[in-house]
Image (cartoon, rainbow, N blue to C red; front, top):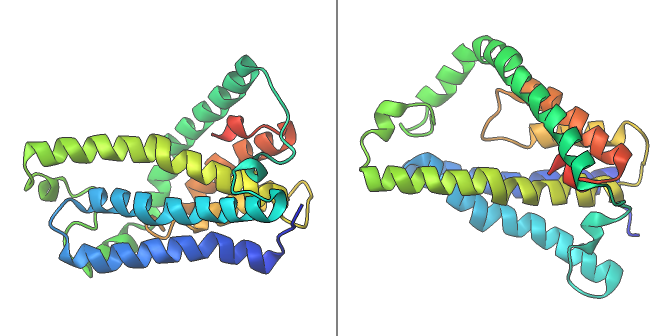
Length: 221
């Protein structure tokens, strides 16, 4: 197995999100569609290919062919019911955190968030519903549908294969804190949502650790 050192880990994590964030920031100034739709499209065309490409290239290096096999390195089988039960528990925990921690974090960073968004063109604030109302119903339906597909299927599956699968299993320093550290870096890599890191870390670190201990990527997916 080709191990990843700390420098390689950081570069693999932050180069894709830097490319995505800069693309979104630049194109967002000339956007004629809802910004959240633009972001999802860019995520599909930029972030997903880069992350999957890194996994495929590593597969070529390790196994002689382009594959996602190394994202499942060291994984063990677990009954579907056990996976669903464990995942459901952590899903409920994340829900509680979203109701308790997220509002507090939003309040703490409210002024900074407003200052940042006020310096950008209208539309970068995804909660500006008056802005969204300026678009036609067909555009809004497309936006909701694509957001759902990207945010529920495309991005989460890609990110779990990349972070909890490939990066976690190939990092050279394998110890109990490894999945926690990568979960923290995973939270920080969300440059486009910089004010919810505490919530993301508390929500994702426990399930990342569970997936690591149980050696089953499907728990976190």
